[in-house]
Image (tube, rainbow, N blue to C red):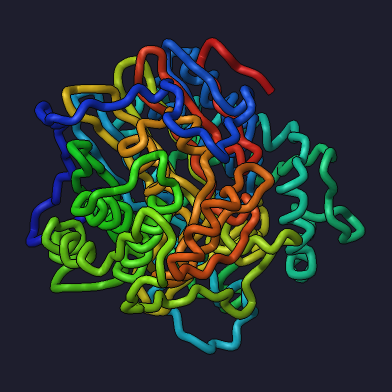
Length: 569
């Protein structure tokens, strides 16, 4: 099976060398913020320093698994793959073997490699098939292929070794946390329809598991044992593929052995750009790293307000993010040509011309030229948790002492994916989220690596939360580069998210809150503000490759960060 994206008969390499010259001086990520108003620093459990590497992920068990791999001599990719499997056990509403992954790896030589393991629509798919909703929406899984490719090309451990901690978690169980329990409970009315889902994610009487319960998944443990013994090929051409095919044929589903056998983790189309001397590397469609780059490059064309003008900064970055979100599906020729256009300085300048910079003090409402963003709605049949979550995505970042960085995002689509669990396999199928047979539907995933000038340490980040992934990543990078904030303060600072050029969702507690004065300024300039709680915004996990390395887990979530010398539950 080939593992590269083929273009004109060749494999497109995704390499991006670290720049060596620029006038900008990078801030220290552990320096105090210039302006810490309305910033709540994450609790110490969600920050860590490590001499030999770090990991930041969405669950403490997955973080501990990754940190243990680093402690035992594995590199950042070994730790990332082990963490991905551990998240499939401990946060199955957000990702799993039936889902998708997009990742980017920076190697010690400064080159960057992207992998596209996103879901693919089965070739026999037809709309309005009359199949049960779960089976109609199920997509060809890409996560196992992405895991296998990353490990074989950049790791040092065997697949069996990186799987061992996740197998132990699946067999022995873990304590269900409140947020995860809420998503299982919110999907209970759908999960109960499928015997395998009911047996895995609900009690024997069909009632939801509760926070504090110890839950296990012996079927998933056995599937992982098969992967450990037979390799990732077993998922696409072996015994696991046969089990998937048999289930789909029994139910009239679309994912058949030929679909699985032809699936491959591709070399991601690169999304590359610069921001004030910093090089930004991410993945293009079906991921969305180009939107991060476009917004930042648009801002570089402007005099971005400093840290003492948070309202003006929000006004500028909010507009830049809107245009980047509106453009992320734009096409011009091939996908490679589209990537070149959307990450070009010329396109950034065109968009920057539409951004209105407000006066330093409130004035009559500014002139506007609206370009409304296409609203994102909840598709019919989507599983939604009790908390109202519809996205099912998780992100983690790892670093090692040799200079590797990994930004890795994996997903199921909406919360709990299709809600359909593969019988005897224990994992949930991701939602297709597309209609064209053989296509890989576009995603808001944006794993990103940022490389400062003069050989200064790089950092990796990404997020979860649908389109708020993109806006969260953009804001964290801008606050580090423009406002010289520490990594922790940049992640924790209050956020905005654009619905339209002048309509923003604005954070109002419990983690961070914009001041009343800043809100008044924005409203005085003609912006409409819609308050949203901290949990609405994207969830970022980031690591900074310094001496020591610094890791920050999203304070709006329940994750953690640890290094090989600091491992805690």
